[in-house]
Amino acid sequence: MSYIPLANITLTSAQSSVTFGSIPTSVNGVALRDLVLVVNGNYTTADGNTLVRLNGDSGSNYSNVYMAGGGAGAGSGALSGVWLYGGGMNTTAGHSQIWNIMDYSATNKHKTVLNRSNEIGTNSAVYAWAGRWANTSAVTSVYIQGSSNFAIGSSFALYGIAG
Amino acid sequence: MSMTFIQHTELTGSQNSIVFSSIPTTFTDLLIVCSLRGNASSAYNDSFIQINGDTGANYSARALNGDGSSANSSSTSGASSSGRIGFSVGNNATASTFGSMQIYIPNYRSNTAKSIGTDAVTENNGGAYMNINAVLYSGTSPITSVSINGLSTDFVSGSSATLYGITRGSTPGVTVS
Image (cartoon, rainbow over the protein chains, first blue to last red):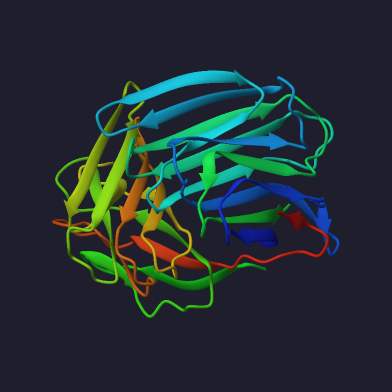
């Protein structure tokens, strides 16, 4: 499996969102099949989920299902609406998330997304989310937003997986 | 290619731990892929991670487990000498079966606490177990060694672990802001 680095940013000031744009479907003649987004950081204030939109689509075109374990119990549920959901972050350092966007360059299928999140601190839990974007367009941009600002030092790295 | 093979270890006898040391500082993230079987007298065998040889109470963990009929969650907080990273199979499991596990450590060279995510699965000829785990190592030194261990049990011959380095970067034309 070949990870091809596409773009990355480490925040030098707090900001509410990060956007990756002009995502190609191939690099140097090598076709890309999946996207992997690695997030490592924390929020400046409130605890809460991390949210994603694809291609700037703010319509009600997203559906999600999750399972979570907070130590005392396990839970599962579903959400639909205008976001893809990931697990939580809080204000203490040391949270990580990996987002997998499957077959993102295909133009004949809805896009499925997996999120694995690791939150230790306030409201600690381990999460797995699965989402669907009801659109057949190739993914060209990924917008990720926090429940509050992402703190200084938070990092975001996007990779393409050749296939 | 940003995913680089660093080292592979396969045990030829029982051993309590698999240790990667003198980890190069040329990558941004670490990925460890494990195939583990322990000698615990049960179908399952807990596995743990220890960073930089640190045996202090610097590890917290949350786990979500599923066995095909129910799900549960467990935790350890701040009082552990190593972080629980999930199950491998134990000595009572079907012969020749090994648990599979993937461990991802972003920003392993940072000077902040380290977030470690693991996904693990075992299959025991009809009985299966899967778990996902979040570990926080509160040490702030860059990671130079990683130990995968069975705590009070050993891993048996054939258990293996492979360490990869991931390097972030950029491709011309792709934007981020």
